[in-house]
View 1 (spheres, one colour):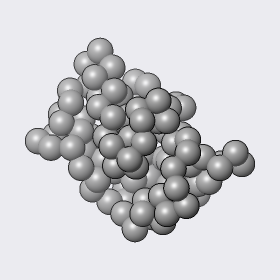
View 2 (cartoon, helix red, strand yellow; view 1 turned 45 degrees about the vertical axis):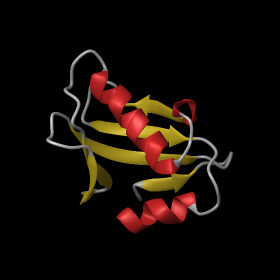
View 3 (tube, helix red, strand yellow; view 1 turned 90 degrees about the vertical axis):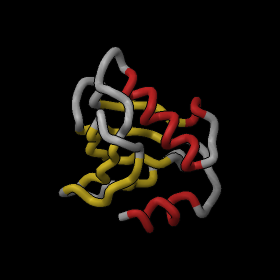
View 4 (cartoon, rainbow, N blue to C red; view 1 turned 180 degrees about the vertical axis):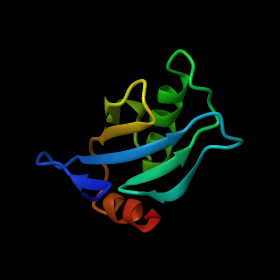
Length: 97
């Protein structure tokens, strides 16, 4: 299983491993079959999930509404869907892994 998959509707589905409470928010690299992301936000009251969606939207240069948490609301293992984006977005994301 690859951490980045293209959905049938043209969106992207990302398999992520999240480390909340880090010093800064950043992509780390592959963690098994998932992309690891450190988040500065604490894992309290959905703050880490909101920070994750905002971070991905900013990286992809898309509105926050284009990023949806599919699974893993209370887990470090998450699946996120990104709608829209240009043709180079998947290529830019693949360079991270």
